[in-house]
Length: 501
Image 1: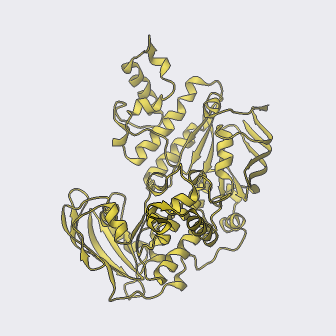
Image 2 (image 1 turned 90 degrees about the horizontal axis):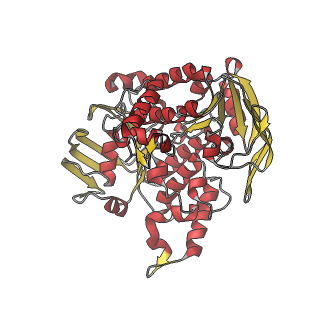
């Protein structure tokens, strides 16, 4: 259905795709894996029409094509379900599903809302989502929004002759296992009318869902394997170009924390409907992991510590002083750095450059009497790009154009350069490849060695166990159990699950 022949794509200073050969057969699910910056996103954007290739050929049903824009690609049967989601949250579900194609419901410039709602229900049935199409999208859960994204893509069935190609960009990155299985079942059912490209950093999911897997590194396809006969370690080795360190979470670099230096303390902290009676202490050099199921209250706790949410009861102490005015401004002033789950929305400013994003949190260090000193800014940014191996053409590159892993590194550099001593990490490795995760784990150990305290909401239980000195297990907004690393009650994943569910 779709084929790349020696496709090239070059940006100023960066050759993003280097002679890519790639194909998708009718009814096939193709996996696509590689490190952040390997070229996966660029390849997907060429397929989807967001970028135009500048070498080689792209063929649809054996006919060469160059899509001028995403709408052009959609009219040729290519749709995309985005990792960060493309829905407009203050619009209704049906408005999102038919965004840009409302003319089919219009008479003399007036939209027939009943007709649109009826058509939206038909699309929602395809993804087995029983919701009112008039519902405002912001009221939906992440999983429901993901299914609306898929329903939106499936509207192409009514507009396009022939089968579809649907691109799935990290669709499972924050979904619980039950919802992942639902999505996979839907994808398998849709194979009779669509082919899929599935991008994920979770190798077990790629192997489970895909027929074939393309492995990319540095803008090239380095291997193509059948999922039935693939070896995970071999694929990972080809992705990073080296053996994976078996001390993955840098446990050999875990140093004891300072018992007498308390950076954060909460006493009976609570917020109505989210969490209650949370009492924790974070010490210098400590990694404190908060684990629990989705919606158990952990995210509300760290957002309250940073000042984005205001607790309804209890006390918060930062560096020994009680906090009365909860705001992000005061959080930064008190030396807190927050790496949020939604990095594209809350972590970076997509329209600003790498250097501008890195210095946002502490402009005073780079200015005199309100006038910026660009040379100081640029020197600092160059140092962090080198230190964290951030893949970017230069420090003036738009941060929104970087891969997810490199954006995460920019956010970490922002807070470290601002001198933050309390670091709040909310799923810091979500959507990152193996190499980028290892870089984050190295930074966590370095921050602890520098006297920082880290509160972590991990992407997996294994990650929490590997990184943390202390683990607090949450259920229904309350701490159910404490575990300490290196003590007789050292837990495994099943111990944590027992108190989580």
